[in-house]
Length: 132
View 1 (spheres, rainbow, N blue to C red):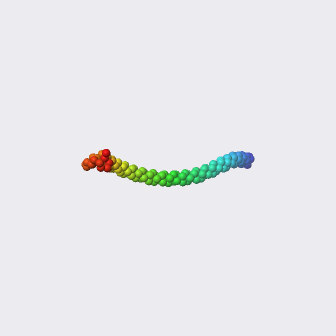
View 2: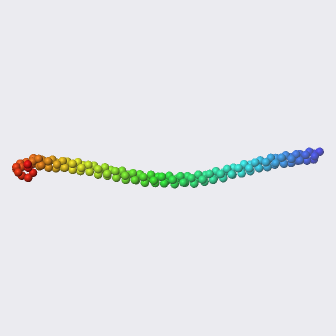
């Protein structure tokens, strides 16, 4: 009887082990499927990261280009400002010269008018050319 109980115990244990192993196999299969799904997701993330890295490099390159364009534009604006300042100075000199020319012309016209009017300090002789 002892042998029969031992054999029954061994058979029950063997059946329990088989059931446990079957459960473990189901769990392993599920874990393998989960790992496979995770691996695919990781590959997708790695690819996405690679694409983002490429895009980040392109963005950095574009930013460098924009900074260079901005620098060039700033230099052009500086040169334009210098040119405008030079033009303003030249215009100021020209205005002063024009005012001086206008003043001198007015003086000349006044002198000629006085001369023609006989107001140059000399009296005209009757019968002299230019008299009536």
